[in-house]
Picture 1 (cartoon, rainbow, N blue to C red):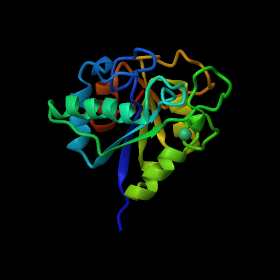
Picture 2: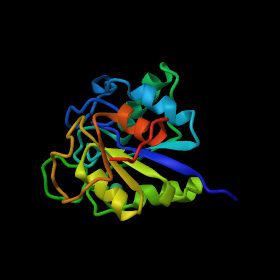
Picture 3: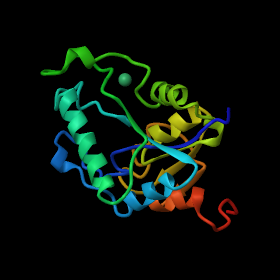
Picture 4: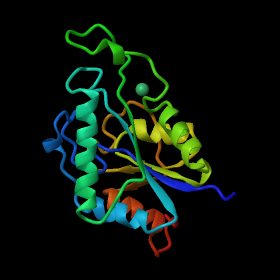
Length: 195
Ligand SMILES: [Zn+2]
């Protein structure tokens, strides 16, 4: 059976406007042309799957149910513009214990928090994805490191953190101004990789 190809997307700072940790649905606002970009993926041979670290739950800034509501709003905003996500994977964990008010159940060392590849691996198995023909697009060096860790092509977008976190010393395969440009690099008609 032919394997699927996928474009994995980070959420905050890539699809929606970066506002630090988002703990309320109403704080979620799409980046310019993000829905159009995802619609292009929907019309292509690639799956479109979100992989997102959401330590808001471990830090007790919102519950898991509220996190689902935030993701529901994301789906709804995209749907209004004719775009959809094939799936959303989140890591609600955070490894650093010992803060007041934290949700200890989620304060664990997991294997799903990017740049670990747990979420990608779950998606790969669920959708029979060929990672070597897939991409990850994100605004932080964590996303790029995640892609490198599982042999995907990587695109850093200049929206959100725009790589300014500098947590990992990594070089993305490509840099784009925003998600729309990044998706065009992958799917556009123009010769893409000549620079
Ligand atoms: Zn996790």
